[in-house]
Image (tube, rainbow, N blue to C red; front, side):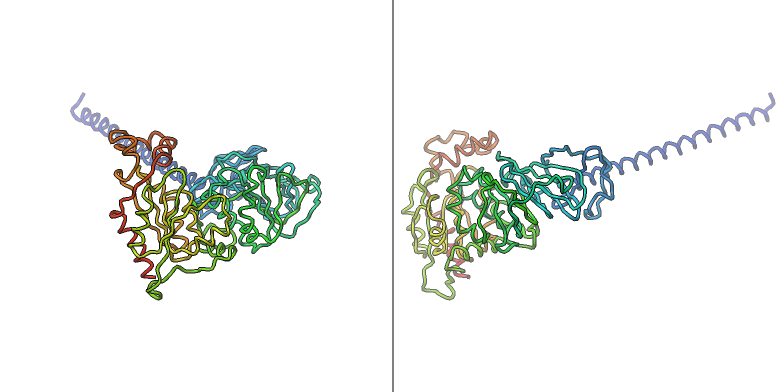
Length: 490
């Protein structure tokens, strides 16, 4: 073979290799680009799904069996895209976490467990031709035109983990399937249960009364209260009858014993809790309300005379009054007289008194309203801060055991939202009776977090059930001074 022919073959082979190399590199780049695009799309879709399902306050459409969620089915949710996955609901459908069901514009069912903070309330807003049946504990919507029959099971208690008889909420197919009305109401209704933790003063307000205010206040008394589970807590209605009359001008209905089929233009099923013992204004149906609105409602309903705490600027010679809550069973103050003397030395007129759970609610509210400062150990009794005049002070004594987060969650933000000053005092190990009863080497003394990790039962037993405290009044004096200074600056 000649030299020129050999050079030609080598050049041809080199050219082929170069072309193949370029082709391979281009294909590899395209594959990488495709992978990148696919990965980005998957992440984007995952984020969209996550936002659709869990974003607070947003509506997620739930379809009937076999139906696919498509763009036209979704009410606008802050311009988010719908997922392409099918979402299936059974015919008898418990409401799952963070889920909303939205039906037609004329005759509407909106059921949700969505909650900004807690995420465990189940509620339905049923609007249109609505009929209740106490015997079956059911609420039915009669559609204006033919609709698919659908049912949901809703807990009427605000904490869905509490086991009570569920309410069956049904969208009927048509008017022919509707039970005839035996009583017709022109006003809306709110249906709720008083079981669960009812009877504990903090839970009475957190789980029932504050959420009931949020659900019903928009109607200005023109609402019927449909109450379930009365037979288990008949004394509850006696205790809070004045407050309930402030929310509704009409007789309440015992749903468990009601033989009537009642017709309403709107029924709210269940009560919603968004934060413990407080109100999230932007989530209130019918317009914003605040915790200050609730305490104002209490003052008006109970006839509480004082709408403001003492102002030492305007009345420098007047002593502010401090109520020291006496506890009769556990979490006791072992040196109440010394604490009272320290409060007197700080400038307060001090009274030591037990606030009893079985006392008249109105009389006790009026008593608390006569004070400017409420001082007590962590517990349900501090809920009486609701009745302090605005500008007053709550001092919470937090038992030893690293439970400040729990104690503040239950009272700090709520009390601030009421227009009060919140202060707390954390008990040291030297002030706790646990040091003497358990000894310095016990894990509850040396390592409170290990007790927390062992579960609520142990944490409650050691730090809330077995502990009493002997306050070091010298250490406590600055907290009392803070309370006094707050009133001086009013």
